[in-house]
Length: 113
Length: 112
Image: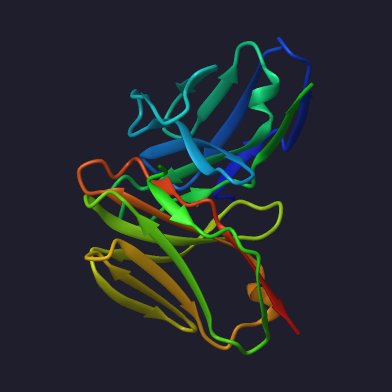
């Protein structure tokens, strides 16, 4: 019963480097999300995918790209990391009806130096 | 102005106390309301979910929604040290339920 699995758990990047955060869910959920969490700011939506084959921007999409690889997997890519992207990143999934809320992964702690 | 406002705390109470956590919001179209609990260095987990107005009870937890005041509350009865965590409220519109707006979270500490 894995739920939502995120990799890696920790990462340190230098400014300008790129990386991809991976997320996979095994609950057959239709919708998947990427959030970032910063002190005092709460959770802010970066991108989401309401169903396989679709992606949409959230509140803070600049500097990020996403890929919904299949129903299970939703990746987040930082093309050229900046110190402002230092944050904790959470992936979440949801059945697609808003009746049951999100299931979150355990997060990726990213530091950009 | 943020869509959802939540007092960050920290809120410190003795074991057994009744805890009241609150959020206010500005968007009258919000209809789905949720409370999440987040332990340190973990992902949030869903505690309570309500649709539109009213109360919902689950064990020691009660969620209340007052849409006329744009105010939601989470009550914890007989609080335990294991309730020490950050509590996040979240809400969304019916027509745009994929986009949940989160409060910044209230940190709760229940002292033994």
